[in-house]
Amino acid sequence: MKLPVKISYKNKNIKIVNAYKITNKKDMLHFLNTLPLELIDRSAKSCLNEWIAHNRLYKIGLFKEHTRDCDLSANESLFRRICYWLLSR
Image 1 (cartoon, rainbow, N blue to C red):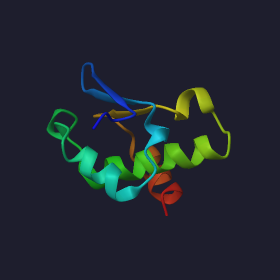
Image 2: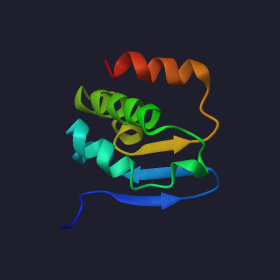
Image 3: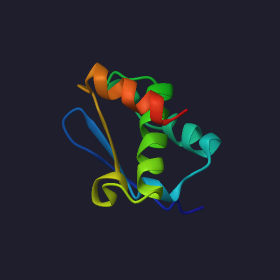
Image 4: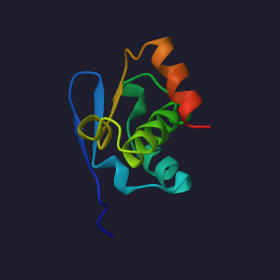
């Protein structure tokens, strides 16, 4: 099965290109569990919140150029993580 997304790794960052194409939370979590999240020292749940937040912003048309992909970074600020958590509810 060919996935509609691509992955790139660079310095403590995992980029999911075209992340908006996967919208089912279960599929997203399964996909995240295949990634080496230890490289960015983040949990799958934290990354899932960020991905859901990106998808919601993309769906309503905000920052489409930035929210179509999802950059999971090691040094994400607590403020941004809280925003992702709120947006993912």
